[in-house]
Image (cartoon, rainbow, N blue to C red; front, side):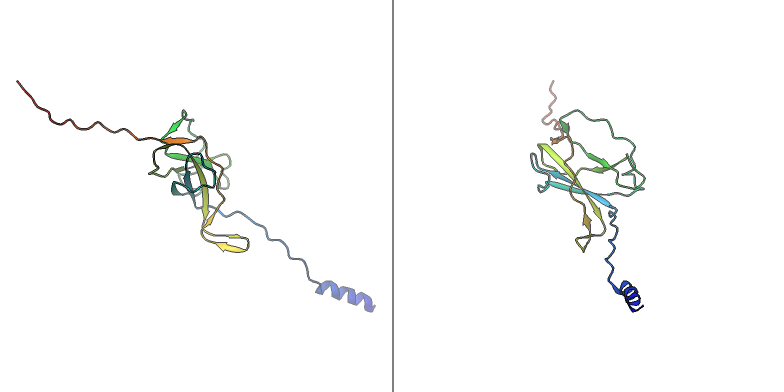
Length: 160
């Protein structure tokens, strides 16, 4: 009888292994589009960056289809499309704008980085919380000068 009571008592006082907490992904509130130099790896320093706010209800997301592909080389693009990360939007897309002020050049690529307000990484709270960089966007693109109007004629003289 004494052994049975001891066994029951041990069951109540032995430490129980901690239950693992479920991890869910933080919901992004924006995306940084990073334009990378020509022929650079995906972790290269960007030549230009632009942040675009996104949400499940924004006009930037829940886009049904991608626009048709443009002929290559792609020259002076303005938009980047990526898979919509929000619940209930499977198979849809979000759109962000490329940064402005990119120097003229060929073979640029872009990557995206989601930003959430906060998250926990390796037990530490991080605010704001960036995602890992995406794979490099395709196709590569070129930035070329945009030709404006010709100069105004000068020295106009009328003669008999």
